[in-house]
Each structure stands twice: as C-alpha cells, then as structure tokens.
Amino acid sequence: MSSPAIKILIADDEEVVLEIMARKISSQGYEVITASDGQEAWEKIVRELPDIIILDLNMPKMDGWAVLSQLRKNPPTKRWQPVIIVSAQNELGNFKKGVDLEADHYLIKPCPIESILKAIRLMLSLIPQRDIQGHV
Image (cartoon, rainbow, N blue to C red):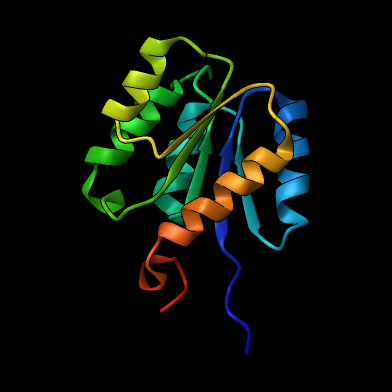
C-alpha cells in the first residue's frame, strides 16, 4: 500500500499563476489544494492541514500576512507547516516581516517553477517524517 501524497496548498489570486503552479506541482506527485483568496486559504488550511503552504501576499478578503499570522498562533494549526511565500513584494521590509512571522522561504515573482519545486523539496527535507500529514 502506498503512502498518501504530500499535500500542498497554493494560495494566489492570479488565476493563471494558480493554474500553472497547481499543474506543475501536481505533476511531481504532490496532492495540490488551491485557494484564490486569503479567507479560502485559511479555511482550507484548517480543514485540510496541508504539509506545505505556498502563499501569495496580495490577496483579497485576507492577505497573505494575515493568513501566515493566523497559522502561526492558532492551536489547531500549531504543528510546523512550512510556508513558502511567493510574492512580487521584494522590499527588504517584507523579507523582515516574513522572518518575523516565521515564513520558511521567500521567493520573488516572477520566478521559475523550478525554484518553487526546489523550495518544496527543501521544506520536505526539513520536516521530520512523523510530522508529514498522513505519514508516520
């Protein structure tokens, strides 16, 4: 019996970007969940408990900063879930804010999908196997 796929949530309000990332990441064998705004992302994080979260910062209803902040302080999502920020916000202050809110990786848009896949592999290498959803 094979193990369940690693579950990755991608949150981005740009439909084309979301579709391309979802297609490329799922083609690598990962289970992909998508959200097109921050509120939807938060609801899916709580319900689905993804292993990794790829998060845009500029989203409607709830921005990526609010999602990340909620994630890091909410007891049901307390377990370590790596967050990869993928955003066009490239100011130094945003990197600092990402570190302060415990983002694990920060990529600047536009970036090659290979950079995102490398970041996913890096995050997976840091997660103890017992902490990966569906794995023991």
